[in-house]
Image (cartoon, rainbow, N blue to C red; front, top):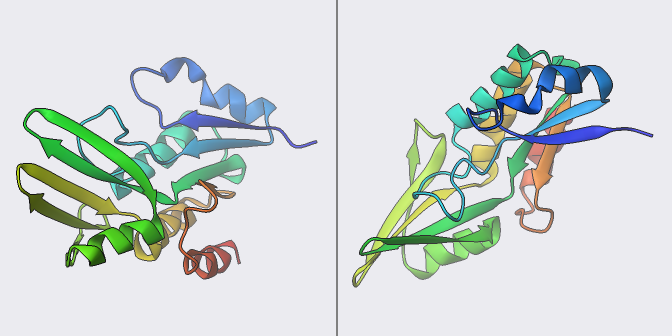
Length: 174
């Protein structure tokens, strides 16, 4: 039997989770390095590199041994729509994101701050934004995880990934 516990990235609202204690009594502590911005939030990246690194470093600082820490990565992107004062989003898989961009003739640009491709698009009164999760953003996240020597990677949600991510994950795990 292997016991793991999933946690949000530490923030002022969940400091009581006591990751250090979890690291003592579980086999693995998983930090969900995604949902930086979620359906009810302002528009933004699902998992910018600073957010991912903060999740890993705060778990280690809280006492989770790197050998027991697993970082969760997103296999999804949110397509954000702002119209007037209303902002909402739809979570879509990696391939669907690429189709959405291609169907609109949008070429995203690499954002060195988030370590993701970013694109925006105006359609009438609606403004769309997307911070793209893809193989390149995943590879950047895996590089940070490797720097910290964490035990492994988890992902949300199987079936939303593009086929090219598996070779990158396999290379990281070896």
